Image 1 (cartoon, rainbow, N blue to C red):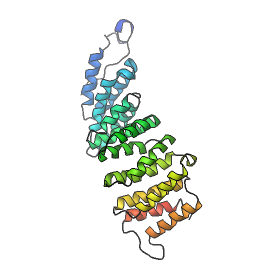
Image 2: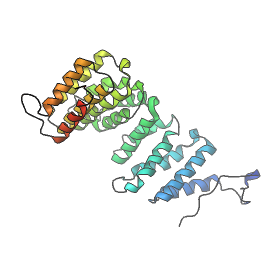
Image 3: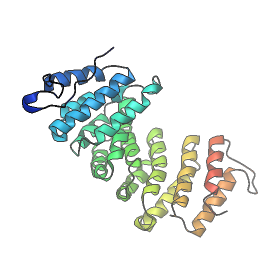
Image 4: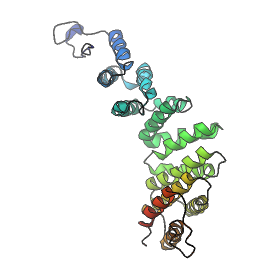
Amino acid sequence: MASDPPRDETGPRGIGKSGLPAPRPDDVRRTIRTLLASDRPEDLRRGLALVEMEIARVGSSEARSLFEMVSAIFYLDPLDRPDLVPVLDEAVSLVVGFGAWVIPVLLDHLEAGDLKAQLAAGNALGRIGADAVEPLLARYASTADPATRVFILYALGKIASPRVVRTVPVALEASRSESLELRDTATRAIGKLAESIPPPDLPTHLKLQLLDRLHASLADTNPGIRAKAVRSLGKLAKAGHLDAAQKQTLATACRRLLGEDESFEWDRAFVVRKEAQEALRFCGA
């Protein structure tokens, strides 16, 4: 069993309240590194608690080496170890508190090529919020790699701020991509963006482009994209972006997908029909 983590309670001249010498910073860092290299949830949590204490001692701007230790948790596989999911969430939350300097570092993790680390970095950037919007868009513009762009759009979709309206043209472009994964992510992201943008803040010309694009995606050959297109249309309706006529158009499309119109030709994919049934709830029909 690992020993208890060193405490940071110190009195005069570095003497701990217990009367023993306070642990040296190097010793604390070694303990953190050891704990965060473990695969035991209790060790990882103790390591994260020590990191939080160290940040309070040195300040977030001096904590780059601590970030590197914490980010190792991003590579844990939550599918293989579902018991570590809460720990991973705690690590992401801790990273968000490091400050603005961590944004470009997290952007580099989006290009790491490891799915687990990319998802964790995307979640962290999403929680950072509005301050991450412009850096994410700048990185999107500077890379042509579809895989990196997928995770940038994923992160942008996690940001609950009206400033994500700047993302709409990018999502529109990506939703037309030949890359299936990028097209899929962009179609989903449109609905996430709609939830964060107040209706008055979404320019009419962009809203009309979104509607045209999503209705066109209802004919995509991939059922996952068709399902996400219906879901995003439903989110636009739920968030108050659609007028009565646009809701009626959506309701008609949903009934067609469900086989409830005169053609009786429903979408063969159950997931698409399920999303269409859900979207109908927001059409007032």
